[in-house]
Each structure stands twice: as structure tokens, then as C-alpha cells.
Image 1: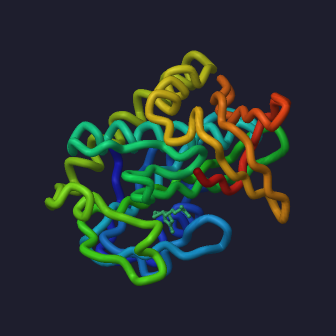
Image 2: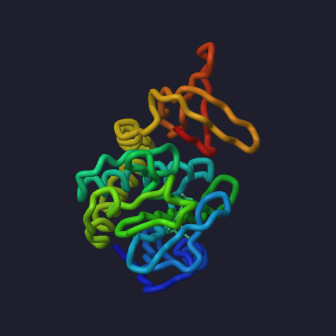
Image 3: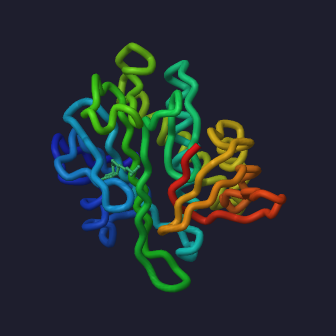
Length: 240
Ligand code: BTN
């Protein structure tokens, strides 16, 4: 893998976007800390030095922007498998963006892209993992956790990065070659934190309570509302 490493950087996603046009497909940006780490919905991402994995993968697939969300699914599956291969923790995927342990978030994914109507120029897949973080600020303690807190030991970030990138590569190639997300979806279903459960979906100011029944071949969440009416969810905030 071609990796660009920074001891300190504002945000690996922001940097990746700045260089994406002149950078070949597959380059990975890694920061030992981020001073302005970004999360979804305009939120921040706490990125203390030496504690976590903060990385962004620059991808240049020949796909329309509508397929971009699939990269998030690939990243979630790869991260889940990668962490599982190194820890013995029960790591699950909270569709569409989060990887969780014991109901608490341990990893977030921020996918950003740029391109024309029918062709993506680049996709940046940003992965943030709380690895050796000892504790969280009060406001995050209830919802966030780290591998150290859950596993009660320190883990090698290097080993974990290698494991995750290898899984990502396999699933990505599989998708590009077959045009199908099947191998990724199998993993997302196997390790899903929500299938079979009542969930709350928040989209804008609309809230829906429904049962998560499936993840489709396209990577969408299928829900069943009261009375059995089925719907597909494209994105949004989902809680179990
Ligand atoms: C979220 O759950 O809100 C997404 C968090 C994504 C954090 C990662 S850390 C590496 C990359 N660079 C950023 O600034 N954000 C992503």
C-alpha cells in the first residue's frame, strides 16, 4: 500500500480531498493525531495523539456517485473483520456507518466524494477508530468506547491498519470485479447490530420506529413498519 503518514494533521479526510486530483487511486493518508478531525453531520471527531487510527483512503472507481455509499459498507465490513482478527471482541456493524462494541461506538466512517453526474472523480473513505483511548470526555462516555476500554489491553495500531486495509482491498476488488456488493453484505448481515431489532430512524425532522429486517444487495436497510409495510432506508441516523 502507498501510505502518507503525518504525526499531526488537521484532518486526513480534508487533506485527502486537497490532494485527491493529483493522487493515484489507493493512496492512504494516516494521522497519528488530528487537530480538526471531522465526523458526520458537521460534528467533530476527537483524535488524540497516538491513541487511535485516523485514516483516509483515496479511491477512484469508475462508478456513478449514486454507488458511493457502497464504499461506506465496504469500509464498515473491513473494519469489523480487521478488528475481529486482532481482538476477541464482539465487534458489530451499526448500519450504515458505525462499528460498535457492547452497544457503544468504537469506529466511525466518513465517506466524501466529488464528481460529475454519472462518474465519480474520487471518493474519500475516512475511518476513525478509538484504539488505545483510556477515557472519553463526559458527553461521549455513554455512547463511545475504545478497544482498550472493552478489551482491557492495548492493541497495535499498525497491525490493525494492515488487517483492515487487507480486508478492504479484498472486498473492494470483489465489488469492482463482480459489480455486486454480495461479499460485503454477507459480512454486514452476519455482524449486524440491528437486524431483527426495533430501531429508530431519524431523517431530517422525521422519526420512524420500525423493525430492521434485511440489508439489500445494494446496501440499503430494509425495514418493516407496523402493519408489515416494508420500506428501504437510504441513509440517516439510526439507533437501536
Ligand atoms: C462519524 O462517525 O461521525 C465519522 C467519523 C469519521 C472520523 C474519521 S478519522 C479519519 C477521517 N478524517 C476525518 O477528519 N474524519 C475521518
